[in-house]
Image (cartoon, rainbow, N blue to C red; front, side, top):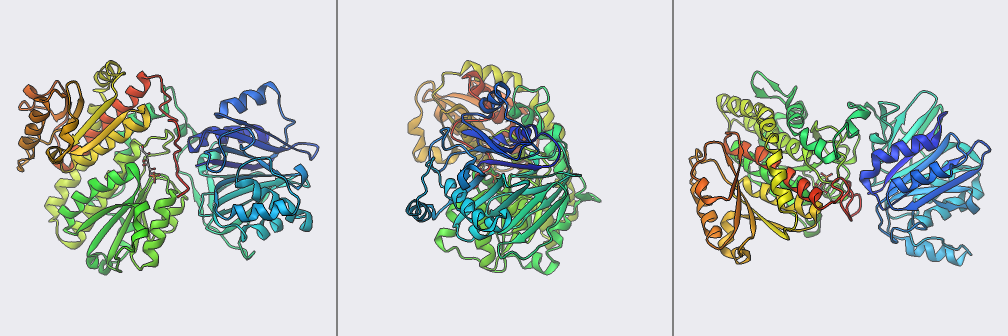
Amino acid sequence: MCGIVGYVGTRSSVEVLLGGLKRLEYRGYDSAGVAVIDDHGHLDTRKHAGKLGILSDDLVATPLTDGQTGIGHTRWATHGGPTDENAHPHLGDEGKLALIHNGIIENFSELKAELLAGGHTFASQTDSEVAALLVGDAFRESGDLTTAMLSVVNRLEGAFTLLAVHSDQPNVVVGARRNSPLVIGLGEGENFLGSDVAAFVEYTHHAMEIGQDQLVTIRPDSVEVVDFEGTPVSPKTFEVNWDASAAEKGGWSSFMAKEISEEPEAVAKTIIGRVHDGLVDLPEVTALGADVLSSIDRVLIIACGTAAYAGMVGKYAIEQWARIPVDVELAHEFRYREPVLSPNTLVVSISQSGETMDTLMAVKYAREQGARTLSICNTQGATIPRESDAVVYTHAGPEVAVASTKAFVAQITAIYLLGLQLGQARGTLSPERARGLVAELQSVPEKLSTVLATGERIKELAHWMADTRSVLFLGRHVGYPVALEGALKLKELAYIHAEGFAAGELKHGPIALIEPGQVVFVIVPSPRDPSSLHAKVVSNIQEIRARGARVIAIAEEGDVAVLPHADEVIRIPLASPFFEPLLAVVPLHIFGMELAAAKGLDVDQPRNLAKSVTVE
Ligand code: F6R
């Protein structure tokens, strides 16, 4: 939700801001804007509704007088529609101050009424303009941007990252955050602020976290952080472990195509360095203490969307391997029903961005209730890991396309590592069994590369189905969350009706949806699995086929039993049941992307969405 970048140094700030916004555009693409303090100490802004390209084209056609200090914003609208007026920056102090905002100011109506009564007028329908006017008024009293921002932040309720510049202090950018992301990029004679490190990774890999309710002032050669009381704090620094090229398309038609192609690597990198002597070794988890690990009597996984489906897959594995009951809950449903938690509950949050507000609030709530919290996260310096007792990072690399793909397989990998570690620590997995499972997990990346090779056939199917209005997905056991994931991708990318069902549930209602021509993807369990699920799913296929469904089966190599019953079979390599989801999901990711592409849609930036949902 909204991408934010700030710069102060010696470079052209317009160039730095536009480059940063380009890499942050996945966070919101309703409108974009910049404010720059030019070489004459004059503040100028430019902003436009629509994608970032409209703003950059305009800045090429009619350049701003450039300077070395500036702020930039790419928006996902909350208060006020995506119009030029509502685009950020917003102005205060008679146009001398510019401010950008990510989040929601919940008490904006009261503040707006107060400002109107004081004689202010508003140029937009946003909540953000309230902050611009308040900080502008406070600057007039103190003549200092840090002091002005400090005096305002404690009056704001809700979630916010604010950045501001003022023409009377030309070499200063001030940022503040509460429940919304902000990181600092440390350079030589220059410093940066960004919603995430992608904003500045082109210029520096040296970064600094900024905590909740903290305020930062950057100048070309200094960075000062204080809490909202004004007390100095010393934040942690970290090194960004990926290059700017990782966040570029690199010749692919879309970020999504590139990220799907990186699914094998995402799994491999998440495992690397975490296996010793054939067994899982996650110091992040063992650091919780042997007594804690043995006393855990319940695991509760909280996440949203695709991350929640990864959690559902994880439930089956942790229960089987560590023999601990596992519940999976959508983070936004969690804290509003007084859930029962104890110090023996391990609450595992899963989040690619590490900033999803629903998940963050659920983690905070769980901690307040005394539960242990562990996060599985893909983004260094993000808020959720910082708010958790432990973190297991996925190493999928930056995910730019709004729809999550490589993060999903990396999340499943991480939760499997956690399940194996718990099973090893609690003695519910013998070392031999654990070694066998670890070896199979390590073989997944190579198998994934084989699955990627089926991409051309899936593309043909997708193009041939470009007019399809509804697609259903069926799966069982770990195949069920994969069915949900396949349906979600199709909804968000191709804007068509799609639903995922547990195959066994079909006869309890959804089978009524089947009519001649209805396309149904079925994730078929392995016939080698000792459970009878393969036969049951084949029966389900026969039931829907008898009613006219067109069945596309995703089945393992050598499964001939499925052939007579499917219109099309997409093959995945042999794997034992827990590893099938990692393989079976890839054709569905490709299908979602290709069907959207066949309809001429933007697969990286689907309508109405933003990658990082930092509002509740
Ligand atoms: C779907 C998708 C979303 C996210 C969800 C959680 O393709 O990307 O459903 O999975 O918004 O986001 P994170 O993982 O960043 O918490």
